[in-house]
Image 1 (tube, rainbow, N blue to C red):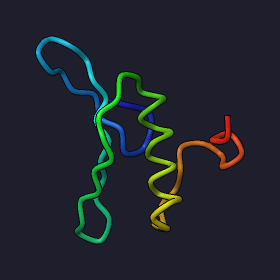
Image 2: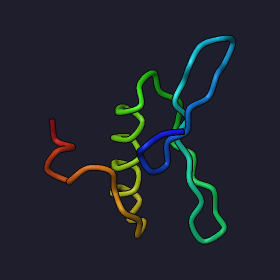
Image 3: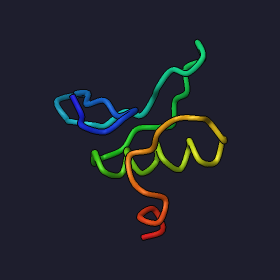
Amino acid sequence: MSKYKGVTKRRMSGRVIWYGSFITNKVRHTFGVYDTEIECAKAHDLYVLKKGIKRKTNFFKKKLVQ
């Protein structure tokens, strides 16, 4: 379980990975697999902003520039 939206913890071959996906309007959006939870959360925000999806982000927009 993750504290970030669109981020799920999974185990693959004994290794922990962070999987990015969410459902909006009955459509599944998948945006990748990441090594860290924060990396995946930032990828979620970038995906949402780039696609113009009306969904809350995990971080402020200014923080994503870092």
